[in-house]
Image (cartoon, rainbow, N blue to C red; front, side, top):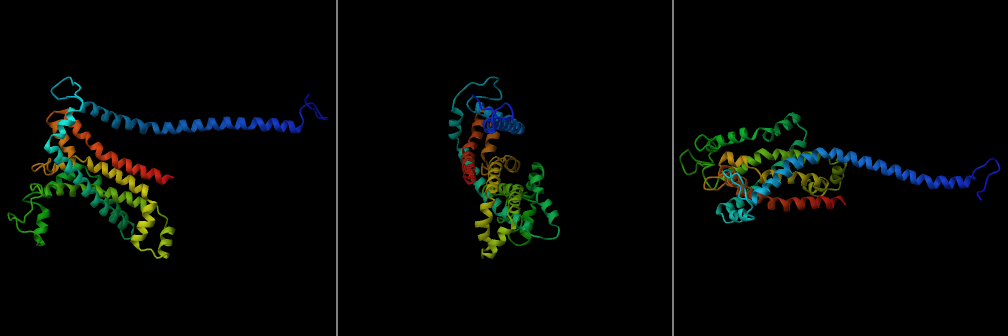
Length: 329
């Protein structure tokens, strides 16, 4: 029988407290779950446009290229049949494929080294206080924002075998001889210089992107931390290595990952400058895939050659993202 208080019918205060204490957690748990569900749904709704963009503009073309790579798709044939890995085997048997693969690796490594050095130096310079700092910061991004056709064609004129402004300057300062002599470099016609000329244009176009990414990371480092490192007697390079670099490591990795993808898949610079010549000296995998798949009409083999970029990019992406995940913990 339930005890009743003398003032009125109903459970005693202790019993009422027990009832309330039991009901309240269940109600609060239900409300918490409901709010969490709404928040998750709202988060997924915000991510939906980006996910749809990736699926339509990245996922669908990638799957279609896989379909082409395992078929005998050709521009002149209305129907493609499945042939398995025959296109990949044929690509591996081509001598020009191995030349393009070697050039792609050289292109990536050399460009990455120079962009790292120039981007870091430029970012440190833009951190300093000087007159016209905002104007200079705006001018720095011009190479990256110019239409690629305009900038590359301008460089092609600068590399001209006879009217090269680069050779004119080098000749005036005495570093090379006059036009027609053996010391007059033919930048786009010499197999020893063509790939280096293409790398120089790629570095000029994209190292401002590296500088902007590094500049954003440097400005996020608290000045108090740098001042404390100075008080402890750390030199400039010690501060950068032991203080700045660990703090902006995620930014560095994301920027380096984007730069790797942009460099390895850069078709426009090499194609507009040399089209892979002379004698395949500057041919890289994107140019070879374009020439075989689009110009020659062999869509299947061109797609297979383009997919060889995936094994080059996948290990780098895996290592970068794995290091980022480890640093989160």
